[in-house]
Length: 586
Image 1 (cartoon, rainbow, N blue to C red):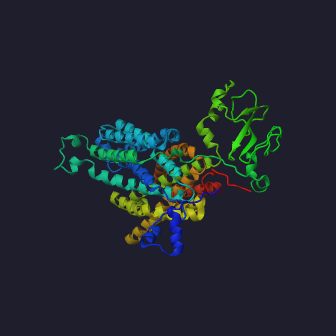
Image 2 (image 1 turned 180 degrees about the vertical axis):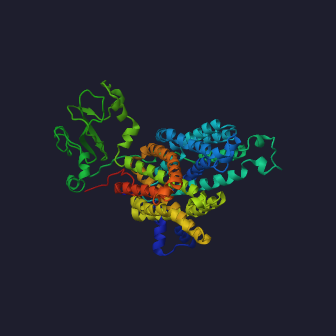
Image 3 (image 1 turned 30 degrees about the vertical axis):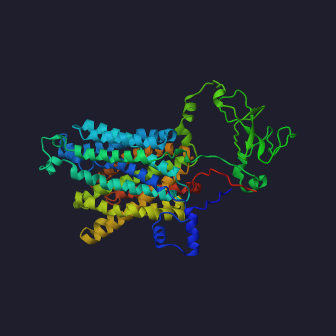
């Protein structure tokens, strides 16, 4: 039964005004810039913005060390030729920390709530960031970055919050906002820390070499990074409500017509309660002599108490207002009340093997849910491709022209990354929801992935424009801009597919599992990509195409193709959130 909208419903008022042709200029402008359709459920923007502010702090924590990390390695006393290796070790520690903690934060958010987990992560990151500024050797830097990764569980929790407050009409718009927050952190973090690192050297008139910031040249950048977590902590504490219990998976069956179910909804047959001998139970009791009203029906359901009853029993359920609980695990002998408390039933001790304990683990139960394994695999594979391709681009762009690179300096690489990313942070919020509404998350992923396949395999061909400076930059920015947009689109689409594969109370744990595997892939991608690229420009070039500089780009293009094939195996039902209510049938 569909609940009628209240008289003061703004969406209804807007529709009525539209029919009357009385839309004001403000309303027309508002509709033009709206990220959802007029008939869609409005996003709770207050919650969205507070959540994204917190996510910005998490992203800033990851990226703020990038500009000064090579210099920091020299500060620790290592040689110039070794700084790349040790900088890679420090940078990879944050992903290593996320491997071991991502599932924990998701699991905790499903049990204790999204709000306390968000607050705890921000507080711990703020403290770790300050401590990082006092690092004086490689070991302490690696340990602190490991802790920073372990305490940064905001990505999975943010996706869970957005899932909690959205439905099928606005979930794409909610998920697309992650790109705005995450991308801002990617740009702002390195920009600020690059200016404030080593202040005693850059600004000797304001900072003394013998002062605190002279002895710890990266403390100021770390303090700012800590503030970027502490300020969102205050905003979250005062403005973010708990969103965990906004959705409850309740199956409601009202006025069921058995013939319609058998003809049109075969998948619901298993949900129809059965009697002791398998017959359908209608509006009579077991003896057939007791009448029932239209609102109260007696039905037989099978016990859901696993591993606790010595003998199977039939539970007699009095179902009010058409709400039916059904389970088909056990057959029955006698009647008991459904109000039985499972904790009052004595457990039956039996010998359990290792596999029994594995099957009782939350991770195992979740991964065996249809659609979960394939979407987590797709998210991990996409993470490997995108991170690996981005890393290889930076290495290839900085490689000497004689080794088939572009010969770019750090400034040119930064400009190419910044100019190709900034516009997409805002376009993503508008284009992705429209595409997802038109095609669904599955097809949107596949269409965007087609461009990633093309751009990855042909990127190295841009070097033929080295002697045409303007043409090179136009083609490079265009290619990278579309590439970044498609990458963000794919991540948003696969995140929706993942969230829709489990009930609302499992979303946090699922995102934790996905972030664990993604962190592992993101840690491996730069190593695999960098090693293959180094081999291709030294040994592979002697063999020729495709083992020259094109090799690694072709490999990543092939992995993108595999991602597209894997996505084609996902059920289209994951385009929508799990059904929580069965409609009235007649």
